[in-house]
Length: 90
Image (cartoon, rainbow, N blue to C red; front, side):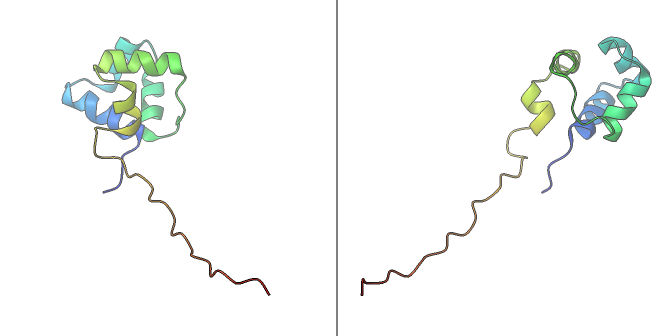
């Protein structure tokens, strides 16, 4: 399962609360255009202060917003370790 982007999670949580984008913007203290950019992925790096405000308004943790609910993040698997053949000294 592919993990979702933060903007998609913001949109989902906003819709679950039955808020318009304008309502979320008002509650967070940003413009509707900013909410559009978050949800559309145009702004990928939200400043920490704003991230904390968004999580407070949406009632979630920063980890939930960034990484998603527990168990949904794809953890990279370690690369295959190549075994080398030991050679005996000449």
